[in-house]
Length: 185
Ligand SMILES: [Ca+2]
Image 1 (cartoon, rainbow, N blue to C red):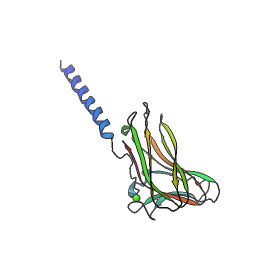
Image 2: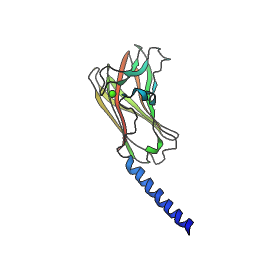
Image 3: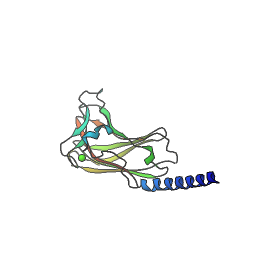
Image 4: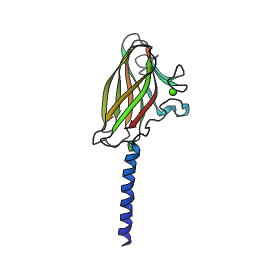
């Protein structure tokens, strides 16, 4: 009798825990250091400058005209010709993801050239989102908001997904990104 009672209590606790975890996911910020203000937590962002294409390509923290606070992330492409893929990415704990749930990816950006699109990528052992999102943007027209919504499939895999903000530059130019956010909505 004692064993059966213990099992019943365990199942009840587990059931409550699962429901709460899903409800609490809505609206919680999943991105760490999305405003790039925490220098001690800079490595939470992976930065890929593709400097094998040009050693002067870089991705790094900038203190020039941020959208918020003192810093933003600059992706700089140094060649006057050609296009090199560059991106920043962050690993997000799989526990924050719920099957069939809709999520919004948002950030602010400015650039010194005409931007046509960003690629938003979400990948793990099962997910393989790669969405090219058009963004009409005129060079040096100040900070603009970017938003993109995606709905997870019914099978989301088991490993922590990486969220990428990925660009392909043409010309000797920079994009600055700030206020990166991802939330269940
Ligand atoms: Ca900032």
